[in-house]
View 1 (cartoon, rainbow over the protein chains, first blue to last red):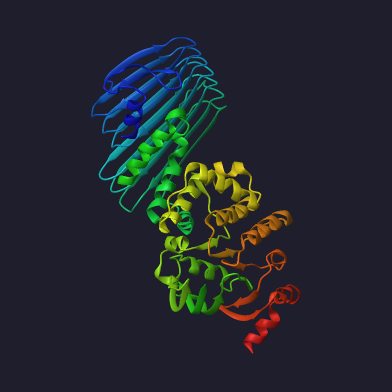
View 2: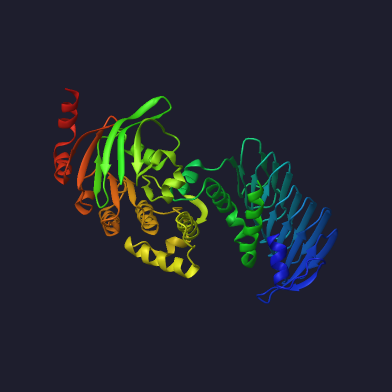
Length: 271
Length: 250
């Protein structure tokens, strides 16, 4: 558990929730296996949440984000659990979330863009193997004009695992000038792994910029050959490629990038 | 260093190499030329161990060992380098990280300690200078968004990092402008020592102005049909392959 070891090493106790201070001096609200959290972020405030799932359970987080507030979230699911995050964003607010899932977990994410000029960014990656089944559902409701959202979900399934992505971008009739992107990228490793992806758009406004895309592929055999020609073993080459695939998710999460990459890498070794 | 005897190789049931013989000694530079589809790139891939091709007949000895016994990665670790005609992009994997693993794998194979972070950075700086590769490229993903020239410089940079005994450069000059060609070719020349050898596969004589070959071979329909010294490349540039091919078919 690279992440838990790291948090321990910087003096953060992961056995309970509470306010913590990160090495850079920034403070964050640590939520460990939260069952139900409802909170509001005040106007212009900045809040950083670290949400950890270390044992099986159900979580529901409901966060109201007042005008011009900024929320960052690091969300890590280390074991099979069920988590639902609901956000309500007011005018000019920003929310940015990185989610890393290394278990057969279920993650539901829904953001209501209720005030204009709000922005929402979600980057999520899951890696599963064996008989695991992971499901990520993302719904972004553009209820007012001039909001932006960008969701990127990457999935890697090995063994006989099943991964599912269900996405929806809803654009209300008067949510003009909405700018929404939703992307699902996936790699199946081996013949038995399955990934299903279903990105959807539901658009009722006419002046919008919305796009979605989904791919499910295998490892790039040309790249594997190239790396082996430079002396990497087949296993190293595959692993490096898969690590590279999820690197843009984790390395955007600032100081946790390295340790999250390790968390994913150690999971990849088990596939 | 390298002895190729009667090498035959196929992809599926199509035979592409049909009896290649070649002897490369340390310190030598060999150029392989020939019309499109004659098997030049296949020859490079077969030497490197690409599993897409099946060797159906013949032998290849490299540094006294049967090269065909070894996997792609073991051939690389033993000092065989293939410069790719189309270097592959690997999103999310930085050049520095990739090279660090490659260099240390090779060191491990030779029973050497891995390089420290400092030693490795120094080595990268030193070697990237050889091909005037922008130092910033080493922090970018492997070949991703590199221009054609940068990709080829990057091949020679990797060759410099790995110091192979034998480098097989597959059309390293294709797609290069005059300046990039000069940089890439002088890079290869700088890396040449009496202990190593290079096989350059090319269509054009102009590369050989910089990398002066000891031997020039013409590959046609999977066989070397003619060998000569560096003047052969000039003659081919002027007269084409027809005189050799017609001769062959008589």
